[in-house]
Length: 433
Ligand code: 5AD
Ligand code: SF4
Image (tube, rainbow, N blue to C red):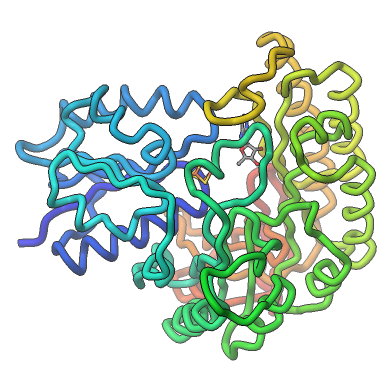
């Protein structure tokens, strides 16, 4: 009988794809199948994130719970970015953990599984890590890695330390992965990297130099492919050529993640983001001119060391001007191994919490305004999920979650939907074509 695998995936889309890869490896080499009940699992994996401190603290209490409820003889493994960061210390603090596997080492899952107390956290790479296995959590869309690691030096961010230097995956390999995914039924591809629009910066050997814009052009030629999304691009690398391709290529979905982090040019400098408030607004305005229906999402950190009231006002000012559809907002969390962790001009905890709620309140206002404007619009929706309430849900090209009454026949199809009712979390509509 097959063994059972329970896997919890935290953090970003990169982790989602890493989990898919581990699921496929474990299935192929060790005959594991997925379960959503941790109590009956023979192997419990937590694929961790280390961007902020809180989830890292929670990891150990969660591990304790898994250790208590797990089946006799079941193994526990810690993978991902916190595994890379803490390494063997995880086993020191939680001695029942059977192995630790870093974010850059997920291809070794089967090896570490069979070596009790092994720790694999090397951040050097090897080309054999590039070709990921075929397990896909959705039959309708496929995540495709285009680069690994990150070469930026943002002073708040631990990721370059957990995922290592940035390496672009060779273009021919990416195109093969994309073709395979489309051949197996995925109409949407989601390209992944820490800094996707820096693609082509460094390859691991002799490979044709192709930049992100050219990669998008080549992928979009795949027949049967309808949609391309990607995350995360960096505002610094949003040159005109890239924005123009984004605007005119009909297969590229018209939603862009533009991680602002701060609206203050001074804070951006301290964060080493490489752009100013003016550059960010200039890129947004160019994009909006070319694609009026574009929807924008962003990441913002409040209370970065040294952030004054005026700096925070600059952030609110950008948010008011851009009217992002979605904002992922965080209170700054000092992370080990980062430059900003050494800064002594920290912002008071309470001030940070106040700024976070001011920002979130402002966003709720913007959201209500944006959502009201959607009534009566017609969007092409790609249906992916049958809900128990009789609705089928999917995403519009510009990333709104749209629901229509319908059955599983709609799954995997695209249709034009007229929006008839709006809510903060989703829009409701009727198929018109
Ligand atoms: N503190 C708070 N938020 C952070 N992020 C990254 N590092 C930190 C940190 N030290 C946020 C950034 C990033 C997102 C993935 O997490 O906004 O874009
Ligand atoms: Fe978290 Fe960053 Fe690692 Fe993704 S790459 S899991 S966001 S620390």
